[in-house]
Image 1 (cartoon, rainbow, N blue to C red):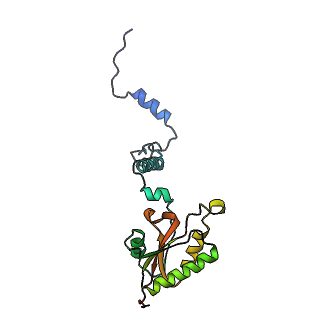
Image 2 (cartoon, rainbow, N blue to C red):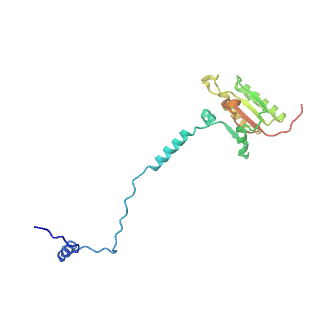
Image 3 (cartoon, rainbow, N blue to C red):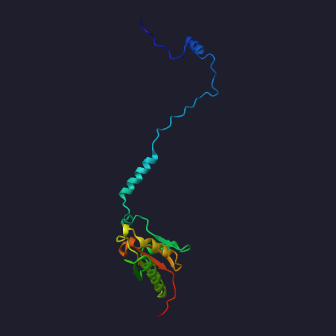
Length: 188
């Protein structure tokens, strides 16, 4: 038995079968149906950004001073003082005119020596001085006892405008560079 090629047009029998199959169905209001495309697969975009940032950071090392000092250098500036003043102090644009070394001093001796040094610096009209408080390597527990005290004492003096950690060549974390208010020089 040979099959005859079927015509592409529906026959009456095809139409009758279709009507029977769709009996009770409601026609659509529109003649077209819109199918939403499936959403794209989830891609962890934040992870890709984090990995790219980590790669960039690993290829661009931090400046040596920041990595050695930990980025938490002590600094202080009086309210109302321009930010550029502290920035210039950090960058060494102020010339250190005198320094005080407190190595080996007790707390009481250090406080007295600091007060006398700052008073004399102001009388002489000095603006920028360095105070070496040490890193505490010889202290019990190797903690820098004078470091915190000196910062506290400096913050409470009205004649101290700002201070910051000294650059590595000037003592690094064992010293502070202090900016004093301008005063009139007195002779004597």
